[in-house]
Length: 338
Image (cartoon, rainbow, N blue to C red; front, side, top):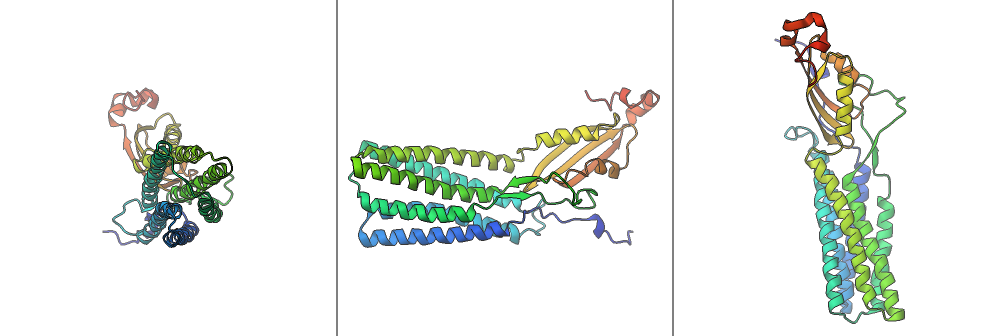
């Protein structure tokens, strides 16, 4: 029975980026958006303005997405040490970004529907009142964009010292940076709202000065195309991460090459997936005629700071050794790559 302490061989599974600043910025932007939304809906009811009401309810979808982003940060942090989440809670933030991308796509499709309907059935537009709404929305979105504009690239956190002895060196000349997809989703919602406001201002000025009523619908279609493009990019990036298929192949190839560089060791199985912002978990199975201790293989990968969780399985190539150990590892049929 073991009588010594095992704490030094254990490590936490908290792979969250330091996102408290992002969480605070997202909450502030959500409050600003909610304030502007309530002001526009209240003014629309008071002034009987359909334009104000429509823009207010449109802003509510962005407020919901921002609220979702803030909740994702909160719950990911709250349950970070919950043992039910085997590899941490970072994917809560990715899931929020994925859901937010669908909300963004719905906003884009809604604008397309409204623009086509407006082209088929032109309406009289209260240009001056609508301009006031668009200018107010643009002002709020510019303030929100400035708040969220801070870098969403976060330095990759250091791996556990018992897994990577050289990962914590302060002299690393190539610090890795990755993007916070939850914050990116919030930022895209603000940009989408700002874009629609800018296009609306241009269209309303054209209608006010030249009576170009069609310009309003055209501006809506252009904005919708851009919003749908952003939504698709965000959906693709977040879905690949949720399916454990995002950006791991170059690193997997590099890991395989480094482990097999001695000519004896072969990688028989390799699993690599993202568990945090710029952090990966790796499970690798090795076989060799003359296997080294697992720590020797860990040391080969110690410079990969992005490997936050590394598990190595080592097996001796018994069949090959029995048939021809004298010929050297390269000639072993079991140990040779097919």
